[in-house]
Amino acid sequence: MSTATSARAWAWPRTLGSRLFVILLAGLVVAYALSFAVLFSERYMSAREVMLGTLETDVSTAIAILDRLPADERPQWLPRLNRGNYQYILGPGSPGVPEMTQRGKDIAARISEASGGRFPVTVESIPGDGKQLQAHLTLSDGSTLTIDVHPRMTPIAQWLPYVLVVQLLLLIVCCWFAVRLSIRPLVALADAADALNPNAQTPPLDETGPTELARAAHAFNAMRQRIARFVEERVQILAAISHDLQTPITRMKLRAEMAEDSEEKRKLLSDLAEIETLVREGLAYARSAHGDGEKPSRIDVGSFVESLVYDYQDTGKPVTLEQHATGAIVTRPHALRRVLTNLTDNAIKFGGAAEMDVRRDGEAVVIEVRDRGPGIPEDKLDAVLQPFVRLENSRSRETGGTGLGLAIAQQLAVAAGGGLTLRNREGGGLVAEVRLGQAAVPGQREQA
Image (cartoon, rainbow, N blue to C red; front, side, top):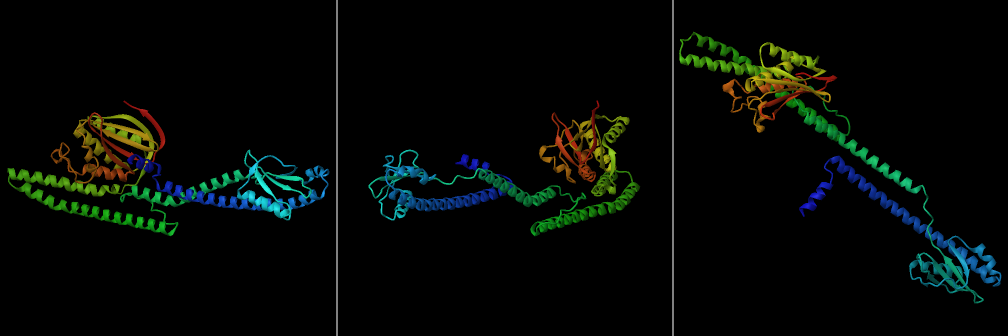
């Protein structure tokens, strides 16, 4: 039972467009088949009536002529009286069996009417293909006359199958176009929902088209604006609080410095330093939501990353560039530098060294920062990108983490026109991947 159910579920299309296409096409094909069947049936009945009417008219004339002719002259008239569907035979004809179908009764009735009822008629079916009938009657002089009937429909025109195929193709194209026209706004709405980011400046959905779709697009645009305003208000509150806290913290530090040296003083100064760090990073996170207002510019990503690596190497930091892909992109350079600096510092701090990799993926540029540190649990890879999320291991506050470093990097990566994802490295360690949208001027080279 379960196998049959799964087979039916597998056979049914999964996408809404495919289901609508199958339903519309099946309905139109069935309606078209019924219309064709009705027309064909009507054509068959019309042709049958025409054939019987012609048979009655011709047979009445032929019987009258043959009945009045002398017996020796009748053979000469047969070729003139024969027709395509029936011929006249002087004699008993071929042996057969009585025809009891409605068709035989109709033919017998028409021939009897054609003879004026003066000659009894019997109809027999000739063994064979089952389509040959013979009507037997006796003329006035006692001679037997057989009418050999081959009932058949008028042949179908040779061009008719081609017309049917063209009509079927037209139905398929029209169904596909109608479904595509109906589904396209839903696909655009789904794509916009997937790409929804209150911090990114993206064009609104087109609000033209049918009333229902226009209302849905308008509602989505309004929802995105409300979310953006809500996020902006939260960020502004965080920035205001972080900014306003700096003054009292500074006063508290000055007062603590003026106090006598003691263990309590050292603990107080340590706590104030930690609070100041949290406030400073909170303010940095608030500013990172829009990339600090930096305007996008065009840079060569390969040279950009290479210069960053050289800066680390000049200061003796273990940073290497494994793969170097060149290509021009439009981004916010300072925001991108802060992202890569943040990720590289984390890699050095928790893994002892950092490996950078720049490669192209279609029209996108991917920058990876890898380390051989303890990594992050799989169920925490997405959570650590949220603000104030810390792990209970070496990446915790005791080692200097505040829970905002990766969140700031994520915000700045979005502001730079890309995104940040984390994954654990095979053999141990972490890979931080920054993917930047569009790229140009392709080229790639390997560097040790």
